[in-house]
Image (tube, rainbow, N blue to C red; front, side, top):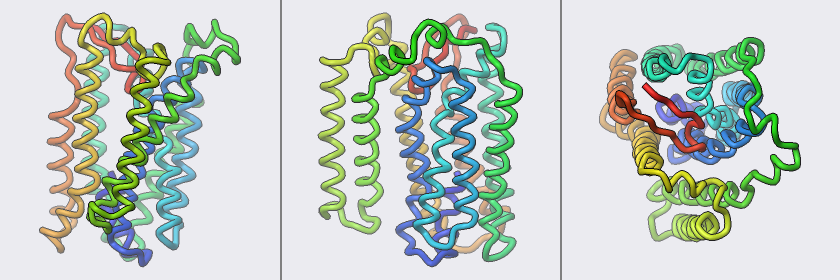
Length: 326
């Protein structure tokens, strides 16, 4: 969230135009959306441990790059590298269910969301305090984030030692690579990236009719149509496995809920910081942090999935490759 909340502060500190600040938040949104499904598929074939550890290393390195950056290209590059870690977010929920008995899994998921909300509140209040320390106070936010990512990767690498997954044991490397939906994941990532770029550039700084916006949206839309055709007629067990749609509506409901959650996250991360700085150009540490905490908490509390008593559902592989039963 720091990439969205403190984006204008960072842009001003490195002498960049204000409109470029949007890319700090969008780097996380785009990379998370693009890498989530392939990271989860890799975890099915090679286990969850090393994708999480590897991406945590990228997060650590990216945070250091941002903290040491002297210009906006360096900041955006570092934020993009750091965002690779967030591609493994779905795996964290799967790990929580993997290491606990079935009856405790719904509670574990609830605690994950509760701690995420508490962490967000701490980040907003503490981050604003660090920013207020001086012209380079914002750098400390990324130093702290890097330290936490590095520590989490180290702890998972040392303490998390799960049993091999079924596909991890039964398939050879060649079979694993053959089952990976390379075309589907490429089209998915390319379409999302182009559409996100077009929406981010619209009115910031280009008008909707500009070639930068129109070109990205047209190319992204064409790639999205190609993805639909590919997944419908050519790949039945790829990114969107057809078996997920045959049994009931659970996958569709989960995917739609995740879509709404992503829309709200995008709007909050991209637009709320600009709105807040426009409406409240000056403010204290507590008031700035409190506004962000209020909005972030309301977003999280209203969009996170609920587990119903005596119900069973499975989230899609791109979001959380696990089944839960209360």
